Structure formats: C-alpha cells, structure tokens
Image 1 (tube, rainbow, N blue to C red):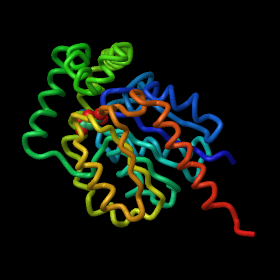
Image 2: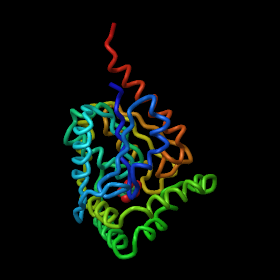
Image 3: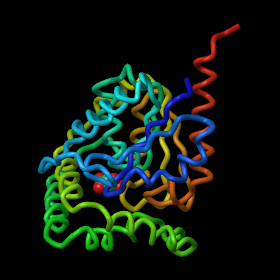
Image 4: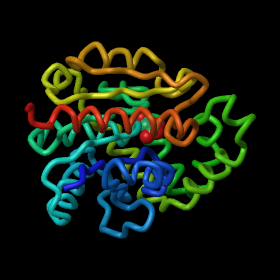
Length: 255
Ligand code: MLT
C-alpha cells in the first residue's frame, strides 16, 4: 500500500494548514491532514484541557478506522508535541518521524501562566483577538514582506477556530510533560526541519532534538519562520519527498 504521511497541525490551526503538502506530496504518500479535536470542522466534545495524549489517542483511533497500520508522522510545533506523545505510546505504528519547528521540553511556570491567559483571552475576547496577536510572530520578517497573503491566510485560519478549542489546546500544552528522555529511544528515521528565523522556537531547540535523536537529520530553511511548510513549501516538500524516498529504499528487500 502507498505509504501514509500523517500531518499534525500546530496551534491554533487546522488540517487545511497542510494544503500545500497534500497537493505536492500526493504522489509520494497518502497524505492525511486531520483537524485536531475541536479545530477546523471537528465537532467532537471538548474537555477544558486537551492533553497531547488525548490528541494522539484521537489520531490513533483515526488510523485504526482508516486501516492504516504504520505511518510517517509529521508534526509542526504543537503537532510535534502530539507526534512525540504518539510515538511514546505506539512506537510500533511509526515508521518515520518528521519534527517541524518544535521541541521536546515542557513549559516553565511563566509559560504555563501565559497559556492560561491565552485560554482566557480566547474564551472572553474570541479567536480573532488571538489571531491578530499571533499572526506576526509566526512568520519571518521576510515572509511578511514578500508574501503578505500568507500572513492574511494564517490570520484568517486562526480567527475561524472555536474559542473553546483554542482554550483547551492552550491548557493541554501547559500540562504537557518534558519528553527529552524519549528522544534517545526513538529508533525510526527522523528528520528535523526548522526555519532560521523562527521567533517561537529558537534554533537551539531543534539542535537539541537533532543531538538527542540517534541518526536524525536536520534541515534549517533560511529565511523561514515558525511555519516552514507554508513559508517555504517547495524546499519543505522536497525535503519530505526525499525522506520518504529514502524510507522506501530502506524497506526495499536486498537482491
Ligand atoms: C504552535 O505553533 O503550535 C505553538 O506555537 C506551539 C506553542 O505555543 O508551544
């Protein structure tokens, strides 16, 4: 069967974030880009806090329902936290891992307080306020100058999310554990992708992942910010396609 690439979006986005990957990578894999609980079109009941484990469990159920045994996980930022939770719980279901603009560490006390504030702002003031505050921080200065339409698209996507989903995700991220201990135990081929101008995840966080995950590779996209798949889709897709090709070679029987 065609290899499956399960793309996991960040905060507070939805599955349509990966539109550029679904189109470009359709020949290389079956691309699944679901809405995490409460985001996009998803209307499943929401708890006050959605843990990364709960999102991962939803994805596990989705793969079971779709009859997909093993997948390549590709998670961006919060999607990376979910991907790490998934591989921690079900390593046998993962045949490759792509971690984009993310980290393995937990929030500190200040970060947790800021998450609660974000959750309350979403509930009290609505998603548009969160979207306006976040949009400029997500993209590099270069992207904002050259591609203002990407900034508008991302702001629109965030403003359309349900405040309850934003609040639940913010509270879930606040309680996520430090997964640094997991990294040396990751045995599948791993690619780390980040942007040189990511204001939210400094380069060191990706370098730390790269150092800790045995045999991992790392690609830094010059001039991209926190949203490398939408800021530099051609480079991003090329790297993912190459990674998928190499997985194919690894699995091809020797003659
Ligand atoms: C994301 O893009 O998913 C968020 O920036 C992650 C975070 O706030 O830690």
